[in-house]
Length: 240
Image 1 (cartoon, one colour):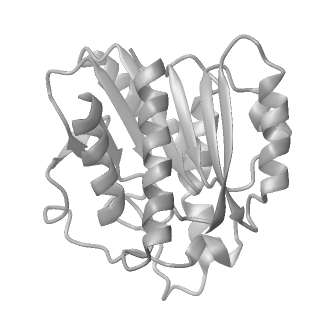
Image 2: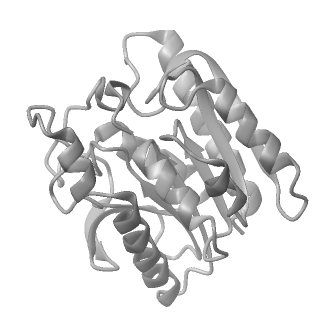
């Protein structure tokens, strides 16, 4: 996870109250961006990349998913107000302080809080750092489905623990999660008959393309939107 690709194309972070149509609330002890119908019985948890829950394009995607299929979408601040600062030279130290094991424990708290509010069906989507957290979450039946977008390095062991319907969306030009490795993980998943899986490699894009795309580049925008549609379709099918 220490590859420089993790830290490229950072979003412009805005105030937690100035981006998106949702609101910031406490969910499971974490400050969270919440968007969508409060009357829905279906929720989607977003686990961000290292740039955190205030990233405008991440929130835009949350808003889009909430409207598309009437999900309640929750984007927690897994970094407790301390997203990665590119001016901080000690990035390995930051990753150690904000490790995926802690992210997984926090994610379980958020899922439990959503269930306590009557949300009976829950999915989870993770981006880069968050993708690895979501794979850990998918090792239980606490959620119904998972989508992993340009993950960090996932091992065979990580994937062998998966117990729920899962989609992995990878990039052709990704040094952190090379397409050959993503395809290998897909082969492991396809051998499992107890749940559905879907693996797709997007041509011509690099790590982070789904939420760090260039608005001025039509190809980048179209590739991101295609991934967003795949994400929406997966959750529509399996989070009921």
